[in-house]
Amino acid sequence: MALLEVRDIAKTYHRGARSVPAIDRFSITVEEGEFVSIVGPSGCGKSTFLHILGGFESPDGGTMLLNGAPIVGPGPDRGMVFQEFALFPWRSVAGNVGWALEVQRVPKAKRLAVAAKYLKLVGLTAFADVYPGELSGGMKQRAALARVLAFEPRILLMDEPFGALDAQTRELMQEELNTIWQETRKTVLFVTHDIEEAIYLSDRVIVFTTRPGRLKDEVRIELARPRRIDVKKSAEYMAYRNRIWDSLRAEVLKTREETG
Amino acid sequence: MASPTAEYSQAQRLLLGLSLPVLALIAWELCARFMTLPSYLIAPSAIAATTWDMALSGELWRHADASLARALAGFAIGAAGGVGMGLLAGIARPVEHFYEPIVSLTYPVPKIVVLPVLVAWLGAGDASKIAVIAAGVFYPTFINALYGAKAVDRLHVWSARNMGASVVQVFFKVVLPSALPQVLAGLRIAFALSLVVVVAAEMQSSRSGLGFLIITAEDNIRFDLMYAAIIAVALAGFGGDRLLVHLRRRLLVGQMVGREGEHG
Image 1 (cartoon, rainbow over the protein chains, first blue to last red):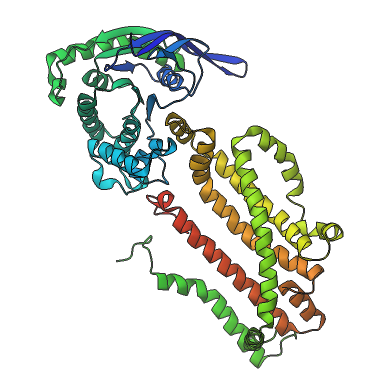
Image 2 (image 1 turned 90 degrees about the vertical axis):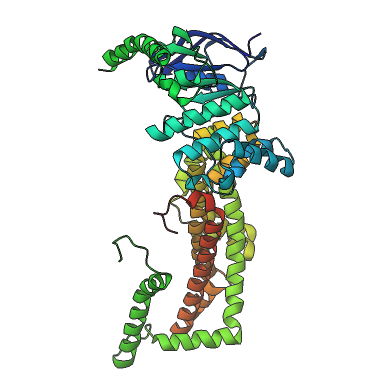
């Protein structure tokens, strides 16, 4: 049995008399320990899909099973990572990382130990007592990742997590996430518009059509693991890149025609 | 070298803040000594002397004490209601819709006008004054808490729910701290207002308090006494305000970092 089984998810938004279809009968299965990316043109409904999986929005139809149990609302079996970090500015970095355990009434000593463990994993040990407002974008996202890992969700749902970072930081963060994944073997569903990032990190890349989002293409990435960043220079990698870009290009062009 | 936006020292800041009142006082004092001023503009030195005497005799303290006790009681009741209801209205649409028309309708009415009704209902003692102060304090605290809670970042709430927080935990651990800056802004306005209302109420019906002192002094053409009481009100307001500013700095450490451009 796959860890995540999603069948025929559909979602339409209603704005006054106008209805905007966002997702059109999308299905996906993700195996335990697998890293799957969804790429698609902006506004194709890929973030909406992740919000539905997170339990923050409800689908119009379809079924979602996590470990065999239906997804009905938000819960700590799924760990959301947002592009905007969403750290609590009034709590220190350690306070943020221990927050989930705090609301689950885990004793303080245990909480601090868990926070310390994950801060070490993301390289923020020295910043435990600092407030998020003092961190750079990359450090904020590392803190957000530690916060989510700390409550040990079955699957990570990452919504363009590096989208707000500058190009250099983004590249470093990709490497870091790759290393962390190698260590933790978490199941990850990763939404991005960056093909290169998707190939480098993933076992499988799903291409979404333009709105309403539908499955357009699926590419298994068979680059050897553990992957070093120079894999991006290999011919194999370039072949994947071209293959996915060709698939995506038509969709991006369609979006352009629609929006002028 | 000082750039146009350079921070100046604490001493310079104090000097800047004191320059206008000090200059005004000096001008006033000089005018009082060398020109003929109307009787209600007594020399600041004379006012200071009266204030000092009254402080020593304990009379000023007695009245200030009575006023502050009423103001703080009304402030506490009004702020508890205003902040509590405001935060609830900010997260629950039905609560907001319940309060919206009544708040819009009654906010512009000076609360002091209902004092006679409250006196008839609660008696001429402290209860009616505390009630009218609480009514005055309710509005700014309610409105600020409402908008503070409405401005909560949706992603903060989502993250909290994702981490397994219950609705109650989201309220106390996300909505409340998010809204705190605006709640404190409301409390600052409300504290000043509580002094305004207590003085007005005491001027209408009371046998004690700074408002009573002011109206009695006016009736007896004792402008020195009147000014002494006014100074006491101003100092009480200043002290309370500083305390709230200090509290704000203590409570909002995280929210203030990385935003050096903001003062207060």
